[in-house]
Image 1 (cartoon, rainbow, N blue to C red):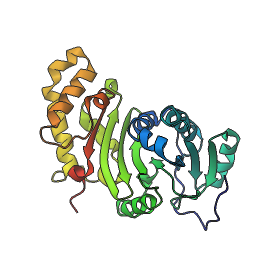
Image 2: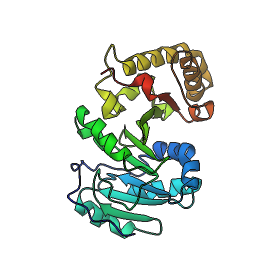
Image 3: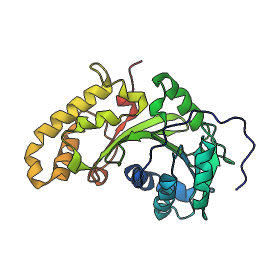
Image 4: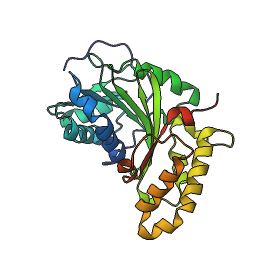
Length: 264
């Protein structure tokens, strides 16, 4: 794949922390919810933006997306040249690595951009401009997924955006590790993490989720999955949950962005 000429990459170097399987929850959600769009795309290119010091997340993204869309190609993009050089031996059919940043230096418009644990180090005020820049690079019907997870991928929260802007927020967890839903607050993406205070919608959502979780305690005898599903079902009375029980069973719940968006 030829890369168009670019000026200096946009962005700053991240810590680069990465581990195998760290982004499995996000990958599986993308494959399930965006797989049809990738299959229909004339050029199904997915970008792993800021993959870090090792290429594992890009390698895994290719494998998981190809289960849903076999023609998918992945481009790993890193702003640190040494990381790109270290990743090059892992290139294969459908997977390449390129030097770059938020300008996303790939030909055409990608069908997917995934930016995991990238914006955490930025100021909150910088998030919206980066979102707009990345969304402007998407193909029609494309998807940007931006979020944060812990070091081994047990807890993860991400925002899904289309070319028009943010659509949904997804909370995903290994249910056996969860004491209460608000434990996920520490993994809120940068756009929301400082808004987890009284008076903000995301704080109210996590408060109500904890209450629903407590009310669902009798279901714990059937396992954490059944308790989670009951709590989410109760949440739907007051919050615009956009997914179905098939996703709740995975330890996920997705809510409309408009319901959780910061108030100013």
